[in-house]
Length: 72
Image 1 (cartoon, one colour):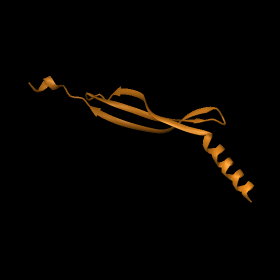
Image 2 (cartoon, one colour):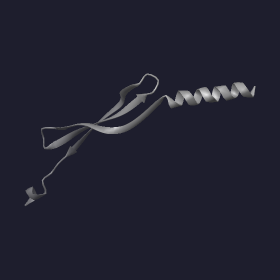
Image 3 (cartoon, helix red, strand yellow):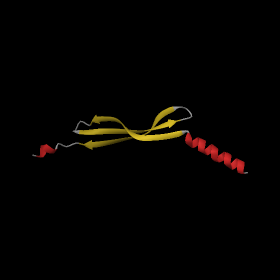
Image 4 (spheres, helix red, strand yellow):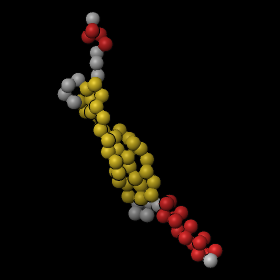
């Protein structure tokens, strides 16, 4: 009975060790045409069993820029 429990735990750990994710990383910065910036970030996932890297999540943010000297 203890051997089967140990085998199940080891199999579970092997499955968990197969994939890992990292990020988010900035993948694109562009102008929004109104004096601001569009920032695109993506997380990546590495699949150790297949040896592939893929994106798993993309988020977009907008940053409005202002000129502090324009208020004078």
